[in-house]
Length: 94
Image 1 (spheres, rainbow, N blue to C red):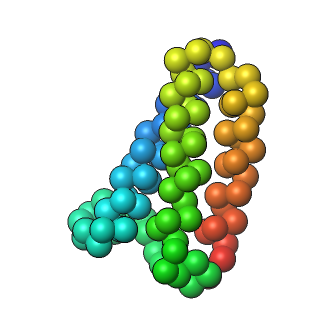
Image 2: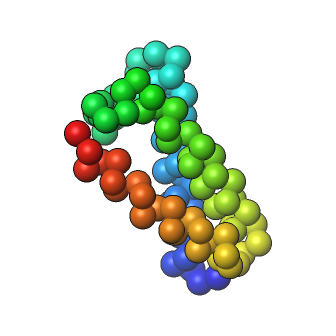
């Protein structure tokens, strides 16, 4: 795996761990700077918005960890990249 690919998967791992923690805080209605940073409510998924992203987050966290451990992108890395295509759509909906 190239250095750039490794940086990409480390970045994904950090971002999705942050996002997962933020969603857990939101599910339990814990208000703090983590839950408010770069967050806005969506009308299309109320009241399930916090729950909708948890399964993909867990998948990407586990998959990124495995990819970094194996030091090989392989099919799992391609699936992670394909799953990232759907994340911007959630931002586009009101």
